[in-house]
Image (cartoon, rainbow, N blue to C red; front, side, top):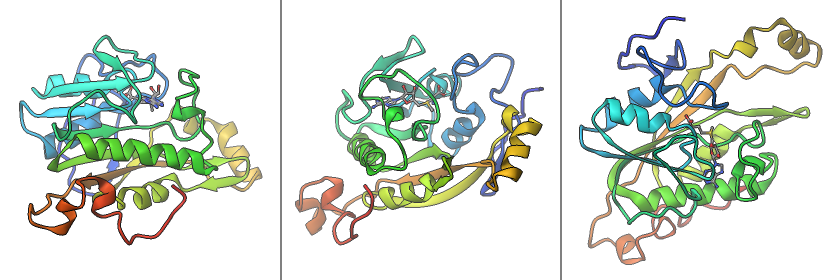
Length: 254
Ligand SMILES: C[S@@+](CC[C@H](N)C(=O)[O-])C[C@H]1O[C@@H](n2cnc3c(N)ncnc32)[C@H](O)[C@@H]1O
């Protein structure tokens, strides 16, 4: 498939034409679950400037780092099991980083147990998205992102819903609920998935016979860490997500 022309998307419906852009590849095509680099390129083009620091706490094969480098941004990536020489080993809930240093964050987490990654007990891909523990773990990842982000900076999370054992798990909607506890959610983009498996007839036959829908899109949720007025009671209240938007928001799964 030819490489896509890199162009800034202007609607909330993105249909990425291929996994990589240009002649080479970003991240690794051998890595199952890599993010389409064209999605990250669009986010960095819109929300960052050359020289900005971009952080990905679940960086896998390093797609975010490769795109950041192509665009003259600085990239720092972590993963429990790095698959790129520049990705460092760390848990996304406890990043070895100072507070408020990132100009942009991007994360493409495991969608429950859809793929096998490291198998380590800390791997969030070992947690079933039908259970609260998955959302509790992802809530901690979002809190850690909030900590390392500069006030006013943006982030993106790329995730797909799950249909598993006759049960629909609306991960995208649950993530919006988690994100609004700490951030301002600034947009919701639908990214159409060009998955080879979706082209296979047997998948469609099973979807018809068992009466379910194959997942045709991913959610791209965009959020912002709001700047807090130095004199506001929120700032005096501790400088954590719990001290700001979390208050008075009720309780969800996470
Ligand atoms: C969908 S993949 C990310 C793919 C990546 N964006 C790329 O393009 O290669 C999800 C990643 O989350 C990592 N992961 C799972 N739990 C983690 C945790 N607690 N801390 C850090 N990384 C974790 C997995 O090892 C896996 O590499």
